[in-house]
Length: 373
Image (cartoon, rainbow, N blue to C red; front, side, top):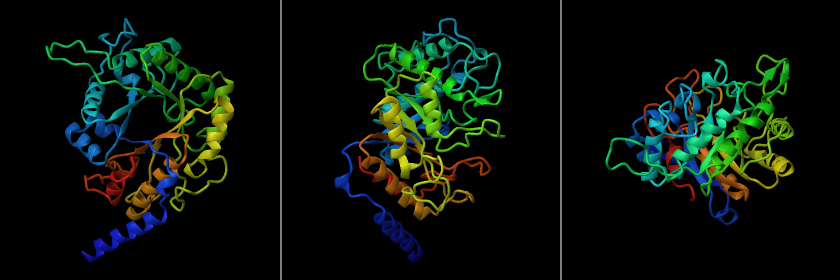
């Protein structure tokens, strides 16, 4: 008992020392969470009950084009085309709506029929296919769509107003980076984001916002390396040059680079973390004007991660500090934590959850639940 009280006291003191005065913070910023395994595949009653206990306002979900449309639809702009399978997403959107949460959908990956049988991180051969899919998705989740089912009491699907074009397109895991020893990902991404932006907005429903970027925090800028990637500012500059003009917000993932850092640390080199987020905002100003900023993925890992893990006490303190930093910045409209529950795969999984892999609450759980809204 004494040990537990001592740990709790250390968490409170550490967190308090890193807090930002409430008077400096803006009145509103959406607090979000992403955990596709829990939200899409897990027990929705448990998942959304837990998200509600955390007072989550917006849930980010990856809308995987390659899984929704495993074959080419005959009428690609029609969300009722039989080639589409929206079941998991319909369920998630309904549960979110029932629990008073908004949804941020990330359109991601390419079905093999759309890119000549290549891997899912290779862009489509015809970007009209992606534009049509974005249109169908935005139509289905417009708030004005009733699914065509045999139920006599079927109701409108809740509206999704926040959309994101891809995930970390400067990272080879998510988008092919090079061809012929040169970076091609900015050119690919300029067309990807434009297609998604147009598809969502062509529905002509009011209030939709499309974020572009979703850039990872760092890159080596070496096209001929074994794992080529681009740093955020270099990538976004090249994407603008390649024709990326239209976006409602710029999204970024300002993860830390070493467990010795804090959320306030200003990284060296070309990385963009939370501690130097204004460097990214300055680049956005130069390239696209004063667009809103979304932090669509962020987190601090804990043991059993042996490389990036910080103590439970530090994770709890960094939850408070990182959201305070974002809230104090007048350009940031939302911040999404990744993830809800630790992955059971210790080799490749993330350990940044509010819950351990066994479902036990970490100290960060209570801190997250008390974040200002």
